[in-house]
Length: 191
Image 1: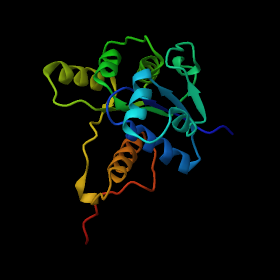
Image 2: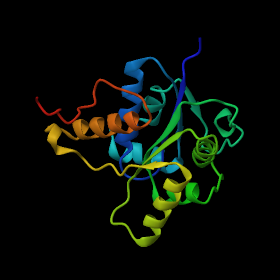
Image 3: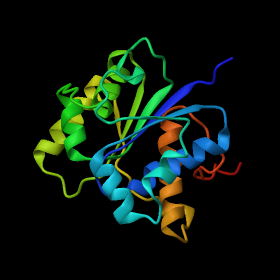
């Protein structure tokens, strides 16, 4: 039996670590076939913000797709995927998704998730926001996407940047319907 597929996309906003942590969490589960798309700006951000090479990040995925390959399997609704996470999601990528501008594989794959009613989570990494950003977020939300700005939860008492990124990535995967042991949940009230 084939493993369910999940798509991780890393666009050019600051926060490449979110996508990397999501990849590592998924690898730890070993239950999903991981498909990865990295934009050229995302590749640059990986190099600027982390100690990893793009090849090391790509090695975390089962299948890597070229950013410009809009004929890749991810561009077709008949290629079933469990869901897609764009982490981080740049304002440019958000805008392209909001207007169905399928000019690259990240946007096309996201558009396919929306049209097929599959889960799409966007870790929008832009601040401060202007009205245009807010309207784009409203549009993609109306289309079925979940916009999740990567705002840290401090009740988890993070000690490192990696702790913050891991918790955010785990929460984003949870929104995709993927439970990961690393997710720290708010404690239930005692009875």
